[in-house]
Length: 342
Ligand code: MRU
Image (cartoon, rainbow, N blue to C red; front, side, top):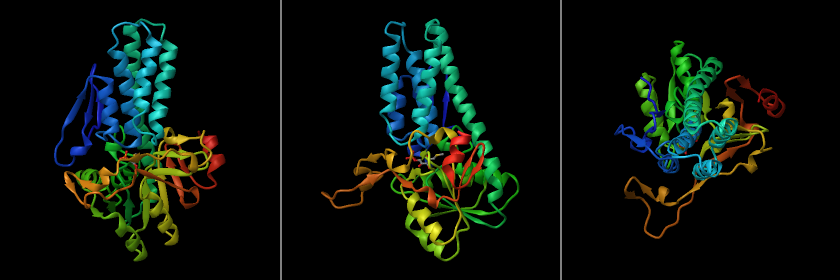
C-alpha cells in the first residue's frame, strides 16, 4: 500500500503530517499558503521532491485565495517569497516556484478565476509528473539490485519524500516488484529519525525486509562485508555531480569508497542545479540545536549544553558511483553528461 503525502483538494492542500508517523496518520488541511509554508519549515512535509510539490501547491493556494487581481504581481511575489524562505537546500522547492512563476507570467492577463484554475492544475501536474519520474528512476535503477543483496539507505527518499513511489526507495520498490529478493538496512537518521520512522514504515508495508541501525553502525557493517550496495536520495546536485543530501550521507560515501561498495544517488532532474558549479556553493540548512538536544519531548543533554545541527552535507562527485535519474544512470565524469541530459 502506498501513502499519499500531499494532494490538492479544491482550495485546500492536504498534507500528511510526517512528524507523527508511524504512530498517527494525521492530515493537515492547509487553507492558507502560510500554513503550507509552515508545514514545509516545520517538516510536517519533507524530502526534496515533496517540498517542491508543496511549494507549487502553496503558490496555487495563495492565488486561489486572492479576492481580486489588484496588485496581482505584488501578491504573487509575496506568496513565492514566503515559501522560498522555508528551507534553503532542496533544489526542487526553487525549481517548482520558478515553474509556477513561468505559468503565472504566461497567464496573468487572464481572468482571476481562470488563473486560479491554471495554477492549481499546474501544481497537480507537478505532483503527477513526479510520481511518473520516480517510476522511471526505479526502472533505470532496479537492475543494480541483485538477488540476496543487502542494500543500505539513509534518511527517507521514499513515497513520503516525493509525490509517491520514491527515488532511492523507488529503485528498491522496482527491484522488489520485479521479483528480486534482498534486504534493506535503514540508517535511523538522527535527529529526525526519517530512516527509523519513515523508511522502515514504508518498507514494512511493502513486505521488504528492513533492519534499522543507528547511523554510526554503518561503517562497521561495511567493514564486515555486510553491505553490498548503497542508494540514497538528493536535495541538490551541482553541475559537477557534487550532491547535498541528509547529514551523514558524506560519511557513508567515504566509507563506501574505502570498502569498495557501490554508492548511488537516485534523483530526478528537478533536483539538479546546473547554475551551481560545485558543491561548495550549495546552501546547507542549519537548524536549531534544540532539535538535537531533544528526542521528542525528552532532553538528552545537560541544561546549558550547545548542539549543532546541519541538516545536510555535501558528497563530492568522486565518491558517487552513479546518479540514477529518470533519463538513465549517469556515471563519471558527470559534468558533460549532466549538461547534455539536463
Ligand atoms: O530534512 P529532510 O527530511 O527534508 O531531508 C530529506 C533528504 O535528505 C532526502 O534524502 C532527500 O530530500 C531526497 S528525497 C527523495
